[in-house]
Length: 190
Image 1: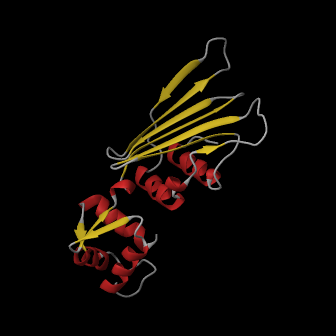
Image 2: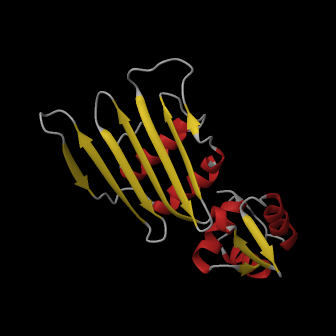
């Protein structure tokens, strides 16, 4: 785990904290991690200053920027053939809901299943790594598509909403994103 992810975890659990609190928390962690010696305050400050897109510092108090403090994530994917999926992740309650719509019968039916397979906290870390807030709003092919996969992603934060959608075109990290959803839900998602 990267240092910024550990700092995000600390702030996520405790709220805004001072650099000294982060330092104490890090140095109280077991040394069985890759680091063999205590963390220095200058290292923490360096990590926070390099990740200005994630962290805000005011009066020595470090917090997650409101536009990166996740509230919920909604993902919808549908293909012409096969099932459609909807995933809703509630980061504040540490839960997710997964729905699939099956078209293999004359009457489409929705099956609702609540899974408790993966970790929402681990999924959240992957969303930070993938930086889906940097995805374009619309991914469309240059040619006419009569079938294919349509999708949409909506990430709500305390300050804003990031939305992205597409038809048979995807962001470069789309397959990593789908893999993280599969890990969370236990269902193959693509």
